[in-house]
Length: 469
Ligand code: NAP
Image 1 (cartoon, rainbow, N blue to C red):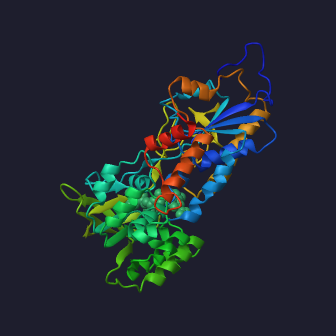
Image 2 (image 1 turned 135 degrees about the vertical axis):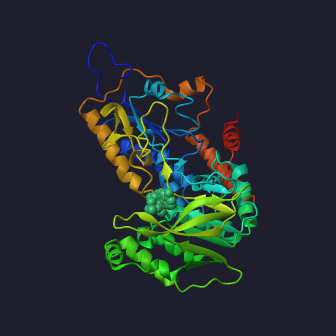
Image 3 (image 1 turned 30 degrees about the horizontal axis):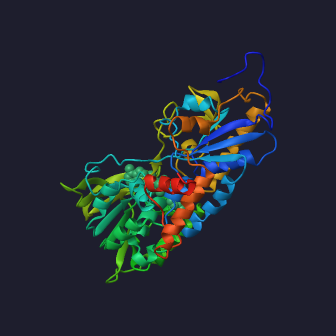
């Protein structure tokens, strides 16, 4: 560890020299980790909560669908944690680019990695990279106003679309399908950027098909999210009753899982729906896997193979193929973690190897390094899942501190001073408050509660204006 005094054991953390911890990623996992560190009395700590973006909240801001205001309201709770005097929000800092991991570790005694899993998974089929084929991560980043969203590509893919195919039957797939099926009036009360409202309002979507490669009993969406599809103003949910006929073994297995039982009940309630003139069709189709995307300059259709689920629950092709017209294909087949330069990531799972939250390097615990959230356990669970997850990690860190193996490593220079000296523009809590106020003010110009600002420069301009710079 850097800076260990040569003349003996470093002293235990104290109010004068607390244990300095950097949490890398200010999404729910990072904020819950910072909270667990700040709200305990056993070990004096000071936390720097770092994010690549000038804004906190990670997937609560750039993942949870904007038409889910109740879920997004959790940001108020998360914001309160940022106000804890033991926590310092340090946004607009790219660990790995603005400061290397090794350099960061000379400024703190421990690091908790909570930077999530932001990459998309691929299908590995022909035509996947054609214009008009997007990853859900691209579309979600765009409609939530993520500064790194590829506006040009997404907006080109959304131009003149009539038929959409969404691949995957998880909650993200339902988010995407629902947002595309909504009317401009339904989207107006969200905090989506104005250009997103304008583009979505102009699409002529008629049919959205959500494809599950296995059966309804294997779908990973949750009942509450599924049920919501039926409340859309101008879309009718359609399900083929034949897809809901399970063999006795599958039916018996389905009965052991409450989520599956409820999902099946909801789906069976929709099996009698018929398409209605003037309304969008939102079709849920199971036992169907994409084989390839067709088109030359852009996607025009998806070749789909009928599947059957084998005894091990795997989707097996039946050879029965049909072609589904599609001007837009969104693959929503999960997220994967990115490697942070200098940090090990398991290629297969896209997660950092760990033992109860302690990072493993070459199979051995790396003292002072911890991990929580999606980059620890993979892309699963709801926002609240991160609370338990982060607590496990922080418990490991605090146990290491209590045992004396994790100690303050002598004097360390202030991280923010170092970043400023490097020409980085860290965004602190007051700066974030300025961005927050600017978004509310921008929303008010159109009678909205808030409009998300999607350009990094605009976010930083709000900070500079408030600071008189
Ligand atoms: P997910 O639940 O893992 O769903 C991924 C889907 O992609 C599954 O249906 C999976 O099918 C399918 N898939 C994977 N590879 C495929 C392939 N090669 N071909 C066809 N289909 C394929 O992940 P997610 O929807 O990205 O959600 C991530 C996490 O965020 C989940 O825990 C989710 O619940 C959570 N989330 C929650 C909410 C909410 O609470 N409202 C909203 C959004 C996200 P198989 O099962 O057959 O692999």
